[in-house]
Length: 114
Image: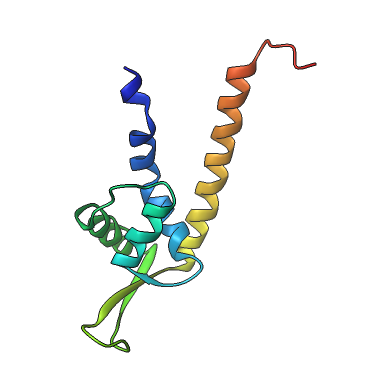
């Protein structure tokens, strides 16, 4: 039962929001996103997981992509957030913060905090 509540499920639920957060400061290609997200608590992330989420986010108008041919080698598809994606990210961050406070309040109710 404890395995059901572990970080894996929470991580999976948070991944689309984390992708938006990673793309907000600057555009990135898929491999760079995998590396960045892996370094920030999303281990074992694979392209087979990332690219369908990116496609869905793009279809929803939350990210946009463009090909970058400026580097040596093949072109790279670069992703960045849209204004709508930034708004959704702000709302999601607030919702996660609210949930954190709610969980903390629930877990400490009735305790004497003096």
